[in-house]
Figure (cartoon, rainbow, N blue to C red):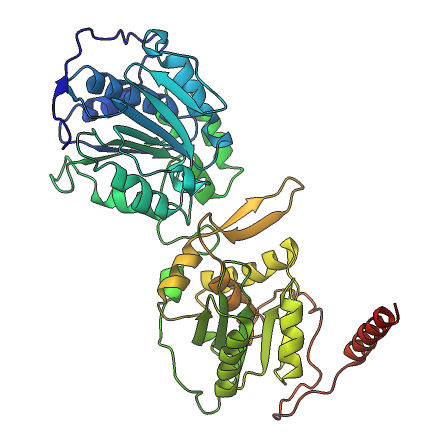
Length: 475
C-alpha cells in the first residue's frame, strides 16, 4: 500500500523573473489560472501575439504552487511537467523560452538538449514530440504545455495526454496554445465549445478559453498587419492574424455541410449512368471504391476496405462493378496500382489509369473543391468521408509547388476516391476546367461483359517479360 505521508517544503524557491512584463491579455490568463477550479487553459492566438511566453510563464507559476505545497511522499519525481509539440523543430521557441525565463536558482542541472530535459528542484520538465507516439509514455503529469495544438492528431489528447492528467496526487494542469488551422485541431474545437463563459455562467468551469489576435500585442504595429490584408486571401488573414477558427471549412474543402445530402442506394436506378473512383491502399491506408451518378454528380455507393489481401479487395471491387456497371472506373495506378490496374483490366473492368504527381493530384482535388464550393456535387453523411474532407490540407513545397494530403494522423483515401469518380462525371453547364490526359485507358468504350482485347502496349510488355524469363532460364 502506498504511503500517504507528505513532504513539507521549508524554503520557497526564488521565482523572481526578469524581462517579463505581461500584456493585458496575458495578465487575464494568469488571473484565470488562479481560480482553484481551473485545470485547462486554451489560448487560440494570432501570429506573434506572445502565446509562447505566456505559456512558459504560466507553467512556471504552476510549478511554484506545486513544489511549495505539501506533496505525497510516494510521488517520484515530486514534480513532472511535459512540453509537447508536433515535432522537435517546432518546439524550438518553447525550449528557448524555458531556458531564458526559468530562474537558474531553481534549475538543478544543465538542460540536456540530447535528452530534451530541463531539471528543476524536485523534478523536471520533459520535451516530447507527438510525431513519435511511443515517447508519450503512460505517466502522471502535474503540468503539460501543448504547443502548436492544431497540428496534433485528436488521439494525442484523447487517448494519450488527457488520461495522464487524471493521475492521483498529480495536479493535472494543461495549457493548450496554437494558431488555428482549417481542417485541423478538432479536439481543440471540442474543448473550446465546452469552456466556461463568465458572461453567461455556462460551460465547464475547469476549462477557460482565450482568443487572442495579433494586435493584442501592443508592441506590434497594427498598420503593418492591416497592410497585409490587401495581399492575402481574407480567410488566410483572419486565421493568421485574427486567430479566427473558421467554421464549416476544411484545409482544402469548403461548404461541406451544404454538399452533405441524399442517401446511398442499394441498386442502380433505371436510366442513370455511373462512374467509379478507386483509390488503392498504401501500407496502412484503406482501399476506397466509390460510385457516382454521372449526371447528378451524386455519391450513391461505396466500399471502404482495409486490412485485406488483394484477392478479397478484388472481390469487393468486382461486386460493386457487377451491381452498377459503371461506364468508367478511374483508378490510382501509382506504384502498386499499376499491378492492380493490369489485374482489373484483364478481368474486363473499364478501368482508366490516373498517375499521381503533386501537380496532377492538385488539379484533381481542386476540381472537387470547385464543385463543393458551388454545391454541384453531393454525398450522404458518412463519418469517415466527413472527417477526411475536413482534415485535408495543402502544403507549400520548397520548390514552389503545392502538395495536398491528409493532416497528420488522418487518411485521404475517401476524398481521393470521390475526386477520381467525379473526374468523368457530366460537367455543369458552362464549366471550364482543363483536365489531365490519362496515362492509360481500357480498350473498348462500351462494356458487354467480355474481356477487352489487349492493346499493343500490353502485348509488347508481355512479350518483353517472356523474353526476360527465357534469358534467365538460359543463364
